[in-house]
Length: 321
Ligand code: SAM
Ligand code: SF4
Image (cartoon, rainbow, N blue to C red; front, side):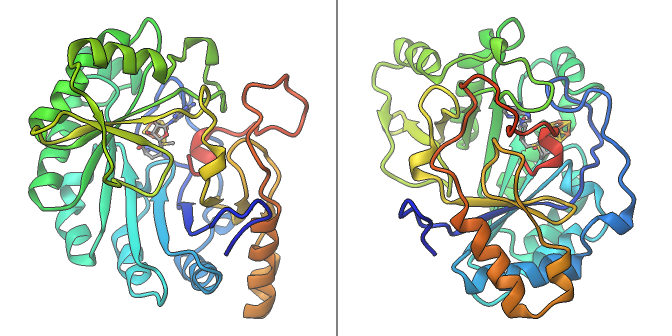
């Protein structure tokens, strides 16, 4: 369906757990508040919400978290969602640490794509930024996922003083592997320090200096706000997600569902509609609540404005980042 600003809303990101097996320094270095399982939506509840969302025109679902693969049964959920009438695409965002053991099931379930976080190619830096992660496991997961024929992308958040010197090597890695490397601007969510972010304009300048033939890619490689670039004749490419410096809101097509059942119209604001009470009501009432959330979508985010109280205070992992 369309929102008030005539944007087509056809994409829902679902956080299936706040928990994670890593402790990324800009996300949840100290872990997250323990939420008991009875506060978390069951898979049946998520499936019911997805059926209602599909009736309103949601066509694509992304499972995220926290780390979605740490919740048991994640691959079964993918399978169920793939069978939901109206849902065309189910994808997953993961840190890749335990992806290897679920790849066959994800492939069999019909997963349409996997995004794997990869902030650095240096094992020591990887361990540092993720609070103990193993780079080799994630690199292997990227290889295995691509080899399994699942469209695979890497996601990288650049930060001054950490990985800004790896822009070219990360880009080269994407060209070598024939995958898309997406550079996501650091957003002031949770504990992330926005002064450490690097604008995608700077990234593009660095890439253009190295590869002057870089051209904007007409092909769509996803459902989101990334602008893609490629080198003619070379597989793989670069996606730039300019959350901050070029507001991506005019083309926003998404809503978010938190693990505890809140529908968030916008990443930036903490308001939303708690769907839990509606899960005790009829399908029509549940659908009406979802519709209201879509109609409440603001025109744009407020990341660059002075803080005024209604902005999101939770961690990225708690809001389906
Ligand atoms: N655990 C999974 C992962 O790391 O891919 C999925 C959840 S994680 C919250 C999703 C993505 O959000 C990751 O690529 C992560 O790097 C990114 N992220 C986390 N905090 C961020 C922030 N403050 N600004 C921009 N991206 C962020
Ligand atoms: Fe976990 Fe992903 Fe957050 Fe890192 S970015 S702590 S992997 S949820």
